Length: 429
Image (cartoon, rainbow, N blue to C red):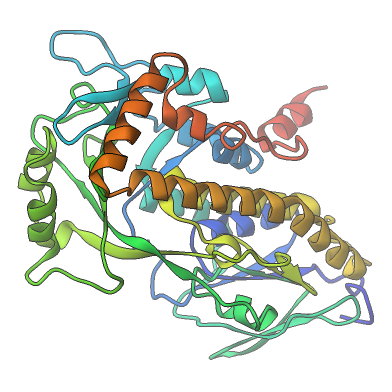
């Protein structure tokens, strides 16, 4: 690199710290735009620590930019918005329930698709990671490669990242290193970092005899300081998650499956069936943290933060991974296509990225925190009023979870540079 700019004849280099959903999406988008990309992943494999993820229409439209949206839409349990009819079929009507099984609010997948312009797709995180990684050339991802941001870079100098194998210079660094982001601490040393959200979560993906997309109505159930969700995956397995208000750092005295049985074993069907099909080793438990204080920006110099590193949020809106995908695509669309003379333009592009993403992700994080206060409410009188209000509202308008996603799931990328559209244009005489 010479002076402010990328040297003629050299491809601009982007280093991505973190090989999770946001990091791999950014890498795929930047590679598509002509960047030379290096992904540094601390873990020894890309196998995600997690279970399933729901891709909302906003994330699917973002993935359209790199030509992957339709591939994931095809993984919807019912891509056409309706489950098949027939004796015993659950249909596409899911919604919100009480622990007794009483429906508080009903909503079909077709209603969500109509409201937001596309389906909500539930899939295993491993599938998402695998397909994102498949968009990258061999050798792009370096495993067992912890990285430290040594210099954030600026208009007149490259960024620098240190690894066990030496130092890398980069025209751009994308820090997608998670909620405990070391890069965030380096860029904003005065920021207090994540805080405990007040509850812990459990997640399970297992085959459950008798439960299929045709027989299982997706639902979330709200109790007093506890919630449970059960959803079918297209491959026939069941994804279940639970959350409860607990002290930070608490763990079961025996195993987490036994803890789930104690807390949820007497809830409505199919909760007992899911627990019966679950082994202790199938259960993942994690305390929930979020960034209560927004960052002043999502970049400094030539270094951008995205995903949990920039705006960790509670999972109550199902938007953590979706917002990381949005970040990655907006970042790529904000930057110049690499060419000689892009040094200053990279810094300017990152400023545009921050301006686009910081207000939106701050608002969504705050909304997720408010949602957590509502669904994790534990006072008996308060929960009774909450449930009655949800039931009443469901009779006069869209279901609560649909309203919660207004202004979120209907988002579209800032400009239409969809890979599929470019391919059609290239084939047209």
